[in-house]
Length: 176
Image (cartoon, rainbow, N blue to C red; front, top):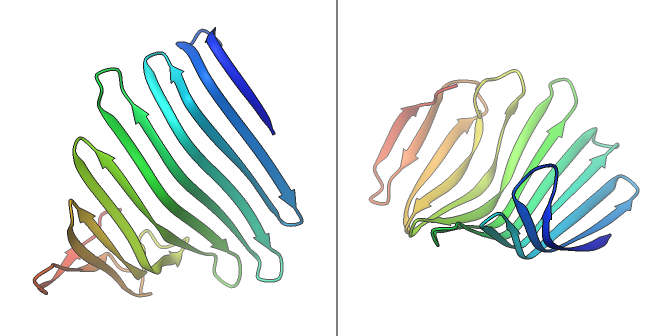
């Protein structure tokens, strides 16, 4: 990898860039990854701190590929407002009789005094020819008020079920 320290640089006519960026790489067999770490890294007046790691793995035995992002980042705007993200998101594409995808992970975003959290309890999945997530469930919350979203049994349809904190179950229609 490398470490680059910028001191009031203008890159391709963009805003001035300042701060330190460290990037590390790793590649072994069917797996590869890189991590970008920012320390008081400015693009104009926007300040970035934290790390974001990307990994890619292939499983030739199962005919699948997985892409994962792990974040622990804070972006601070000129007006002092900030957005932060922390967590892991994973996307797998599997090739077989039907090409399927699945999404898993848990992540938290804090923005304008609100904390949003998503936790996938059972991988969200479907076939790529279906316009909707067909199975899996996740908990979604804002400032601690959580609902569970259940996407069903694998049937390609536009319905999901919300379970509210008081136990009430509601069928909803998904949009494509």
